[in-house]
Every structure is written in C-alpha cells, then in structure tokens.
Length: 280
Length: 318
View: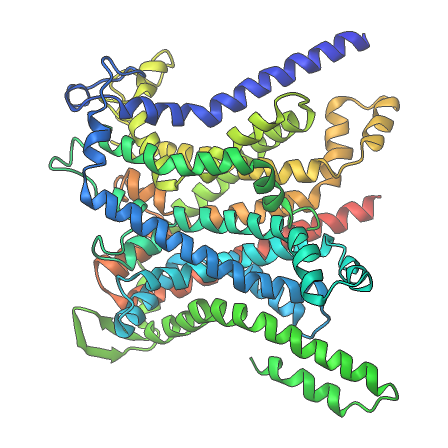
C-alpha cells in the first residue's frame, strides 16, 4: 500500500515536471521555430509547428535593420543605467531599514509597497506633459527616471530582507582582530552583501528590459525607443500580413539575454522574488 | 515630507538622563533619514507629483493640439467619463480579465508549486524553465501567442481542431470572446510562474510534521489540503493574489500587441493611454488616470480586507 502510494507520487511528480516544462518552453520553441520560417512560407500560410525548409534569412535581415539595432542599444543602455542607479539608492535605503532605528521607517516601506502597485498608465498623461516641458521627452533620462522609481520598491524590499540576515557583528569582530574599518567593510561586509545586491540588480534589469507602457508613451523616435516599443511598431508594409518571421526573430534575439541570466542565476532570482513574500 | 524634518527636534526637546544614549539615537535617526531620503525623493518625484498634476489637469478642458484653449471646467471631465458606456465596458473587461486570470493562475500556480515542492531531481532545470516566462518580455509573449492563434500561421487551430468549437478556420481575433481568450492565455502563461514561486515559498513554510500528523489521524488528501496546508500559507496566498490582481488590473501590453483594443477588448489602461497619447486629451485623460488610481486603491483595500476577515474567522473557529 505504502509502496504503491510512493510509486504513484513519483509518477505524479514526473508527469507534473514534464507538464511544467512543456508549459514554460512551448511558446519559446514556437518563436524559435517561427524565426526559421522564410517570408514565402509565412505569406502562403504555414500552420505546422516546424519550418518546411529552415532559413537564416530573418536573422540576417534583423541584424541588418538599423532601427532594431538602435532599439537594442537603447534597451541595454537604459536598463543598465536604471539598474545601477536604482540599486545604489536601494542599497542605502535598505541598509538603513535593516540596521538603523529611525522614525518613518514604516512610512518608507509603505510608500514602497504603494508604488509597487501603482497603475503606471495613470502617470503617462502628466509625465508626457511634464517631460515635454523639461525637454526629457524622447530621451534616455526620460525613461531612466521613472524606471528607477518603479524598480526601487522591489529592490528595497529584496535588499532589506537580505541585509537582515547578515551577521553584522562580524564587522566588529574583524576590527577587534586588528582590521581597519575600511578593511572590515571590504573584506567582511561586501562579500556578505554582494549576493543580495546582485539579485536586486537582476530583478531591476528584468523590469526595465520588459517595460512597455512608458516606453511607447514617452518616446517618439529610434533615438530612445526600446525594443518592446520598437517591436510594436514593426508592422511592415502589409498590416494584414505582419512580418511573422522577423518579429519572431527579434523576439528570439531579445529573449537570449534573459535566458542566459536565468541559466546563470536561477537560484538567486528565486530567492529574491520570494524574499518579501514569506513574512507577509 | 514634514514628518521627515520633525523627529530630530522632537528627540531634542525630550529631557533625558542618559544624554549619551539620546545623542547616539539622534545620530542614528539622522543617518537613517539621510540614507532613505534619495530613494524616497526619487519615488515621490515620479509618482506623487505627477499624480497631483493629473488631479489638477483633470479639472481642465485641455487638449495638447490646442493648448491655448485650456479652460477650468470643474468636475465635468469626471461626469463625461462616468456617464460614458465605453468607460464602463473597459472597466468590466479589465475586472473580468483580472478575476479570471488570477483565479486560473492560483490553481495552476498551486499545482506547479506542489510539483516543485516534491521534486527531488532536476531542481535547477525546473527553476530555470519556470523563470523563462517570468523573464520574457510581455510584448514577446503577446507576439508568440498572437502568432500561435493566427488564422494562417498558427498551430493552435491545427492542433486543437478535434475540439468541437475549434476548426482549422477559427478566427480567434475576429470576435470578442475568442480574442479575450487569447489575451488571457498570454497573460496567464507569462505570470503563472511568478504565482507558483510565491506559493512555493509559502508551501515550504508549512511544517511537514503537521501534515504527517494529519495523515496519521486519517485525514484524506483533500482534508489535509483544506484544513492544514492552505490555512498555513494564507499570508503567501494573500501576497500572491494582491500583487497579481493589481498587476493584472493594469493589463496593457498584451492587448496593445494582440488586438489594439479591437473586438471590444480594450482595458482601462488602454483607454487612458488612447485618450492621452493618441487623442492628446490631457484633461479627460487625467480624469481617467485619477479614476484608475482610485480603483487600484479600492481593489488593494478590498483584497487586504477580504483576507483579514478570513483570518479573523479562522481564528474564531480554532
């Protein structure tokens, strides 16, 4: 009886495992397959999953498309700068929240929570108006500033959860053993805090890389348009027959960095995503 | 912001025997405030200030194409919005998408969490694949599913033609409900992993001993789930539902890419975007922004209330 149960559990887990893999990877396999279908094939209609005769033409076209390359550069630049700044501000704030007693600590955490749930589209109107007045419309800083604000809550929550776990007494212990305070900080605290900071950086980068509402509202040319916004304008000459292959190829190209980051840092990302959730 | 300046003075006026300790506490207080200040300023500059500006602009008739005709109109923009059937249709669409996607995600996400909790092999591979939908750009997910449901180039019709309501020429984006279905599939696909991970964190907090004890007492699988596991992960469920519901309520990317609001699939966010960016109706659009903001506040309050009441009831029973 117990053995039968154990076998059933094992089979169930296996089936669940396979179902999860199919769920997660099928659409990815689909765009990958679509990216190898030539224009002739999609124009004629090709409902089968795999390409009839695979071609690399889409990849050659997309990597030759200056608009796409501009968008890729904008996406990388804007996401990287927002991430860097957001993580710096969040580290300062999270250190204070985790280690210091000060008034208004709760207010800061509540503010962060409120902003995490804020309907971004509500800001599109006023920001559009303000950014045009300040000359920030259609510039990198015009996107970097709001991306910082919207990623700070997640970064602060993740980092303060990490910082609470750090054994800070070790800093004093190192100083007692003759280390200067800078040495104690560099050799003891930085290595302990680095994984948390890094996790916050990954989550922030994902947000900025993915963001769409502000990206289409606050930009107007390829000088600052990011990849998601550029892709939504990438309709081609015939609106009833979008360039399936090219869009799929662009999708594959922007998904590759995500897959690399996920492959390398999956454990950290999961820890970061769930750090605030358990305590409730 | 006034509360930020106050505390040091308040601490200073309090007479205390331990002057040294007070000084230390004051210094710590000051350092703490200084460290959080940049983050607080950045968060407020891009949210509170524009929101106040939206409140102000919503009282005006203001079109960016004719900026000189700006005129104070009081609450008439709100009256226009609230009496417009388009606003109510879009709000209904958005609420429907929110309720359906969160409910489906909760069920599938919980099943995923159970599998991930039990699995002893290939944990890394599992984590990696579950994070891919989470990390993928929403616009990419929307394109992938739009193409999957496409009439000429999609595999969905070909694979599922054996179902009675699907044939090889089903046009998913040709009418309201199929289009809504496709939009929800993309939304659910992309966000279920996030739900699953939050639920997994909650699940791993439930003590194995308690489940084992219930098993020994002869509780069935369903009883163990309902009476032991779920009540013990209520906090995790609340966090997951709160975040996902408010996130689903902001749905925009999927609709923008897949239908552009055609077939009555427009959401509240899309309506606001269209008024502001396409129609340049800043006054009317600001009224919509304020209403959207208030709706989100109301929803957050309702969800927190809902779970609190449940918690109190559970305590009453026990």
